[in-house]
Image (cartoon, rainbow, N blue to C red; front, side, top):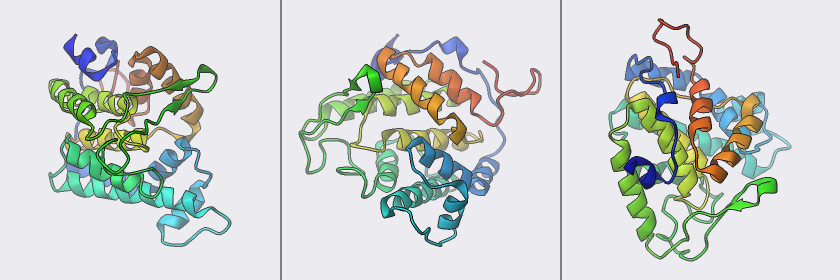
Length: 258
């Protein structure tokens, strides 16, 4: 299938919900706004950030947290700022599954943390270093090499987004997350940025955003390792679906069902 060939991985499309509850863009944005501390804490925990939930809330209230590294606090603040930027884009109808939006959000998320941020690998000053992803006992996953101007990465992104346009919104959103995580368009922050864009796609269609609970961080990481190894996204599709707030709604209630 051309979709799978273009994205670089495959999945069982019959296992993805054919339809999900869709309310309004305003409601979806309001929910994320109200739950921002939880979303930020969850995302930070997936990155191994040690700040506790009360500390995250304190930090988002504008109060520094004693005894914590500046880098850990900055990562949390970047997650919060990028989420707020996403909300602004969605609320005003300016969110789109495009490279400028993707790059802008990475520029906030990975600020002062990555080698470079806000540009595809090879588009900035660094044009040769290729990062990889640690898979523990399974070694490392290495994406396409970094090349000056990022011609291959730009082609893959452009073609991938074009193919995803034909997918239903929920499938398109989750598939984009895996697409960004696999291709590693940026030097760092790929999973965080791709999940944020995933939620932009969802909220733009009135679907509630998804947060991977901090309690499921180990499960998330284990399944992502298997995804990198197998290039089969079925398991991760099911996992992300189960993290949606409407997961588990009884049949007949318009909830998410595989």
